[in-house]
Image (cartoon, rainbow over all chains, first blue to last red; front, top):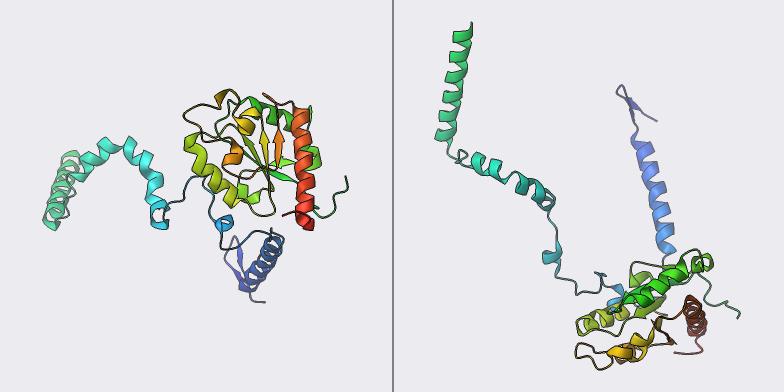
Length: 112
Length: 144
């Protein structure tokens, strides 16, 4: 079996495939032990949401960005200030670049 | 009682339809160390989709009607429904309240009634045993 060693770990594709197969078999065995007496295609197979009607799939999808809601809310003042200079116009960014470069060069010249 | 057809632990989903919490506290007493029904495998579960028994408390407030119907429909067969307390059984002191659509058997079929306000844990355990026996008969096909 070919092993690729890169210092702190070993990458062996066959070992990974074997591990995945073993995990897959365990999952299938556990799944097969699940309850079979329920009626498929009826409400018994529906999503349970504390007894309330389940909204359509596109409405119940939680986007990854939603987990940052509190973060953005807490730093709203900062983001509001930062969004103003970010106009999306290249000329503005070049102007910022030239301005920062000028200040940096001036500081370097004056302190040297 | 010889239970052979229903040969697994009994899982229960507790549904409060507007109870004052008196019955719910007694249900907790059934599960906590003094009565400890869990030693027989009787366990509360978080979803009716995992349950064999619906344990219903409360007289069914109007706002809960749809949820009660939905939760009953989502419980897999074979299933039994236990009503714990006078409110769920016949409305008790709330039976003429404008905000109620119950009692429970006006909304979903009920198999076992446990009377009391609130019923003692021994009575609830007796009701669960009755439900277990009904499940056994359901699995055997003796009743529908």
